Length: 170
Image 1 (cartoon, rainbow, N blue to C red):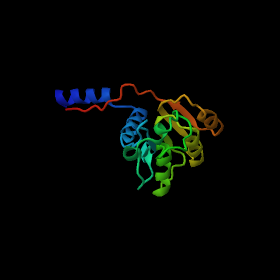
Image 2 (image 1 turned 60 degrees about the vertical axis):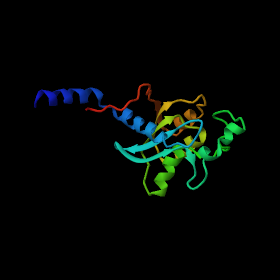
Image 3 (image 1 turned 90 degrees about the vertical axis):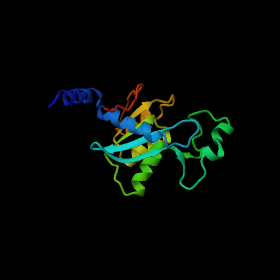
Image 4 (image 1 turned 180 degrees about the vertical axis):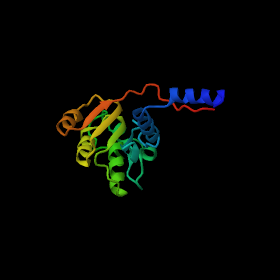
């Protein structure tokens, strides 16, 4: 091994992300596809270190979204975390779960990585889908999901990602 290869190997060891960081970075990348004007949320469902599905918050397929029509929740002055039913978007967690069903992918026993903590509606879907762990980056003030997850034996925790970046060797 020459000196350049040795240096590259040492650099790679320093910048290689943990699995949690890797999948959380992917969730943030998925969130970039969001059509929501308030929050870009992304979700990645993983089992055995393999990506099963992804989802971001946005309108149903074939339906006009907030980028086209504007945000209905903003127009009605609805605060964040309230009246989820008054929204064009399907939540990222919901879309990731739906993708599993749509494509025949079993998500039972999987881990969900999400850029934000789930609302209570998403938490119920997560519990019924068989997901056993939820790792989130940002936590909303509404923590109603916590009691449900505890009762359903779903492990959950926040994984802080203040300095997310993509590292590349040149």
